[in-house]
Image 1: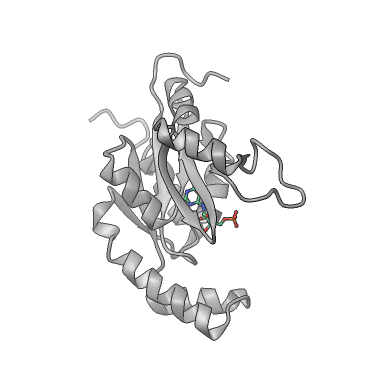
Image 2: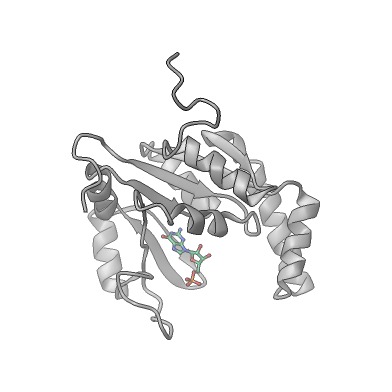
Length: 198
Ligand code: 5GP
């Protein structure tokens, strides 16, 4: 599955607050065969229907710790008592083959990659406004008043970090946001510049 022997690929990091629509944007980006998704490693138990190597690399705590000690992870975190991490090796392989390697990650994880100065394109997906974000989270219907408050507070903290990214894409209209990210990732040329010579 070589995309282009002569061209290096790139890491495309997509991050943003919960409710920003980053997962939907990532799903659309993955329709392009030049884009591959970063499969994380985790120590949590496999859920019904999940496949090892597709949804996650399921590792024991010992395996995870060993890998972490050898620097196998670009970043790792403990979430709800389980360990999660982004593996370095699959990314390096995909990039060498010319793929756009899509890392969808929360803002804390993105900060770890930034701190390590990992080369790549860092994109922050922003909601059109905090009011809209609140409406989207409420619309999910799965939030209690407490969890909504918590998520909104976290989203505000995360929003303040957006200047650290290479690009901020406001997800007001999904098609426009996807088109913008595709141009940023070099998957498309900007609209209106096709065939331009200068
Ligand atoms: P779940 O267990 O429901 O699939 O994921 C739980 C949480 O783990 C989610 O909030 C998700 O963002 C986070 N997560 C999944 N993979 C990674 C990863 O590779 N690194 C980090 N830092 N968090 C992850």
